[in-house]
Length: 180
Image (cartoon, rainbow, N blue to C red):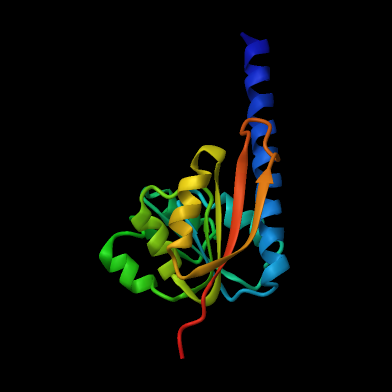
């Protein structure tokens, strides 16, 4: 039994290290296209592990998080995010409050619905950056949905940074400027 506990602890540690490496890679991808964002929203942030890691690269950026669970309030209390929103970005009051407010929005999982992707793009300021990470199985459908949004895909990357997740893709897109 003791050996099994050691193996489980090792797996957990490896998983945590993989997550940190993937999060650092995501932060560096944003750094290449937007070196000093003022504000950043992490959708589905949970306990805000990603904002905590990204802060290493963006110490002056204000990170906010939205999550359907109350874990995001714990993240605010732990100073991992400045503003914590419990709910989903498709909730109309939350969507209105966050509209065109962020330089960067991250969604490090497939959008739950096409409306969630639309709400993520709507939360961006003009020329803001959207970062999506998703498994290969979602690639074609997400690309079609993204093409329907007012944004331009800047980069598409196939990630193999996680020993437990294969065929993960990252898309970095820029919201189109507002028409003059």
